[in-house]
Length: 187
Image 1 (tube, helix red, strand yellow):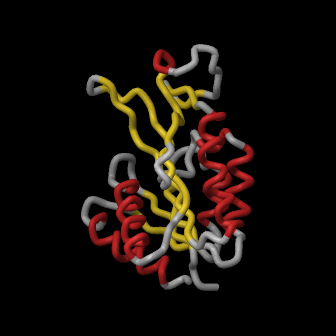
Image 2 (tube, helix red, strand yellow):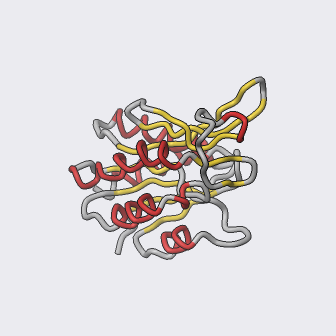
């Protein structure tokens, strides 16, 4: 089976999200409108205070915040390090992006499938279903395999229809066109 999904991995801060954003721009230039989301750091006064989910249609909302920056003081969510994951906000934004594949979208972008996102059972189910949709290709980022593996990430790594690419400082710029070509050639 030919690979039709691309998983980008690499160390934090290496440029995976930048590659994803540039591939999305290339797809749009090619006349293809991908659906999905990416995550973006939120900084205040030079300090990272959390992450937002940013949908490709421009809608955005919190994924996680350091506890003193949680927008609603009654929000109680799972913790990853110093961050509280805002599951309801994440699911409100991420789940419709995954359902776009069922509505005829050819390319879904998932940046990222990581520890924070794994707290959502609905997200995990939707990711599995999306990877099995006929005629849909997915570009996703996954964490480097260190420590305790995330079961869904390991399941995706082992699929025969997936190409895994490690992003490095040396290859991140050239990967944009390579990944764009891989995706466009799956259609």
